[in-house]
Length: 180
Image (cartoon, rainbow, N blue to C red; front, side, top):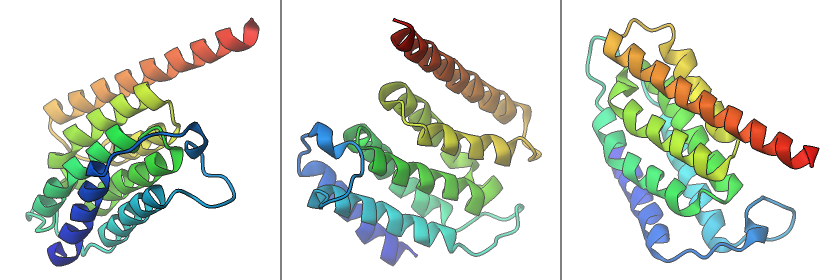
């Protein structure tokens, strides 16, 4: 798995370092030709997602051998949101990847949960794309029923609180715009 995912991660990092200037017309996927760099970024993230979906089952009591690899790749995904997050279809691809990590690795994804949750909160605050709430729901659905320790459960509720506050702020700001 590493021999496939590490080169994809390296390509993602290379695209991040190539410099990105945001043209407002690139923020939403529309008919026509997409900028090559954005298309490549989306495709690389989707390739990671495909590999993540194809993970073998590992008993919850055993260590999952792919989690350290995902821990290596996670900073590249988080940086993708920091750099390309204003582009909705890039954000959707990364959010989908996060969701698949949660569902495919279940309890094994706990070491990745903190950075992913923080990235989802900060990305939703910054870009206001609904895909971040959608991916956040995966965390709540997966770990709301898992037998996790109180510290993890408290952290998840803090995460839910932050996303809820951000959602209500967004709704209030949008309702003020439309009432004027």
